[in-house]
Image 1: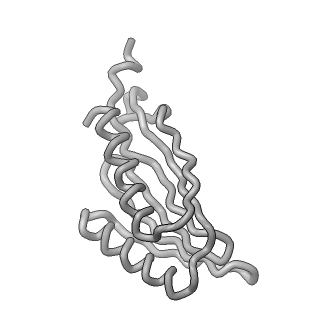
Image 2 (image 1 turned 120 degrees about the horizontal axis):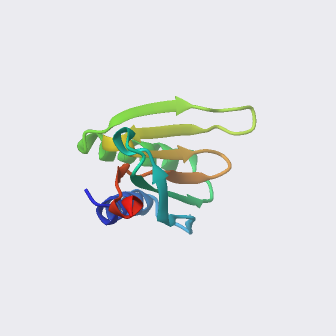
Length: 129
């Protein structure tokens, strides 16, 4: 997979998840990407992104979590659910781990709803020049 393909795959995944809960999302993606240690060679590239919006209702949070879990599982990703609640914020994180370091998390809490993560780490031919 090339860096361009990794970028398209990752931001496409974020777009699909974001569409599961329509609303006024704020995107803070890093389309230029950054360094990663591809298979111990040091010549890799990955991408990061964050999209956030106002908190959803409790019912809508549960619906989103179920949709996201099914979305992750349909792709064969390893799924983990963490309850990170505090006295001030009922926060549940649904995280997926895919191939080559691909990680995407959806957090649904009293303060905000967010989807964020990192693309696969792929070889970067530009780093060898």
